[in-house]
Amino acid sequence: MKHRYYVKGVTCNSCKEKITAAWIAIPAVTDISFVDNHRVDVTMDTHTSVNMLQEALAPLKSYTVSSESVGSLPSWISWLLVYKWLALIIGIVITLTVLDALWFRNFVEWQAVMMSFMGWWFVCFSALKLYNLRWFVDGFVSYDVLAKHWRGYAWLYPFIELALWLAFLFSILPLFASISTFVIMIIGTVGVWKALGRKIQCVCIGTFFSLPLTKVTIVENLFMAGMAVVMIIRFLW
Image (cartoon, rainbow, N blue to C red; front, top):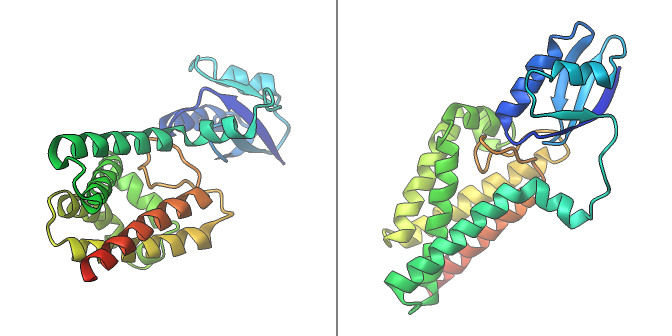
């Protein structure tokens, strides 16, 4: 039998691993599956009470489990709680772009500012992927259409992003970089679209932060693909 529980205090994959280890040690529990940072499905041979699950977490001290969702939050707050780390990273990218434009580019050309944004985007996202490259690769191959057929692409992907950071920020072969960006973002979009509905983690910001694979990832990819198209038209016009 499978039951859904709600856990407070989970912030990363390490939290999930600790909880999984604590609960899988209970004889009746056979499987643990996190839906996101707040919801977890527990499969058990015989019913295990919430109190027993909470007792198993006692040594960890940081987590609280319940059988019902606590409170009724507005949808936008619930969305922000799930995507808070993504929102923070995008905020950092925007801040770096503005500072770069103010100090070095003086906002003289909109395309220069756009290239700066794309460069900072890629370096921030690639750095998070490189934090734990092996975990990123394992997650990426679960839904990316190219990585499924060639695992080497998953290993190369963060370094491709680093190369694009250098290309956009220092204007090195910007047309080629824009075309490359468009191609990899469209490939990524196809993979995410096919995987929608599956309870898997999006690894666009690495695995240090937990992020569900949803249409938000598609919006990210299409946003960057759209910017790449604008740059391609600008260079070819």
